[in-house]
Length: 121
Image 1: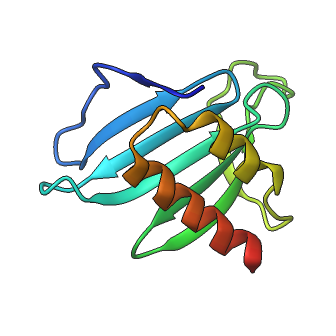
Image 2: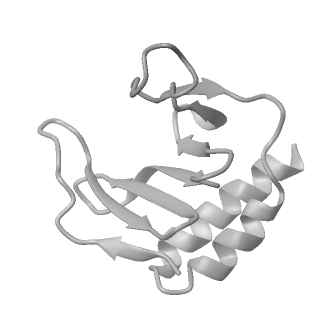
Image 3: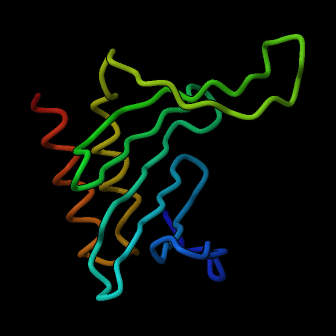
């Protein structure tokens, strides 16, 4: 079940953000000054095949596979997000729905809507 991490570090000049997580998902949500959602990033399958789904109104949606850099000669490299055109795992909608019952309906409805739209393309 997703739970909110209280005390998320905010960055000067950037939108206010909130962070939710569990053992399978991580969700960052960005808000404008009027507390309207201006973007989110949902990362999933964190320990096996780390991927991320990102939405911003100006950019639309994008899906990424996260390369943790661990398989290279220089270990502990910074993870890199690479666009993944192979498609999103359709089970992510089911997982997110089951795990997001404890977060704001405004947030969960928007994430589910964007996931459905992306899955339909």
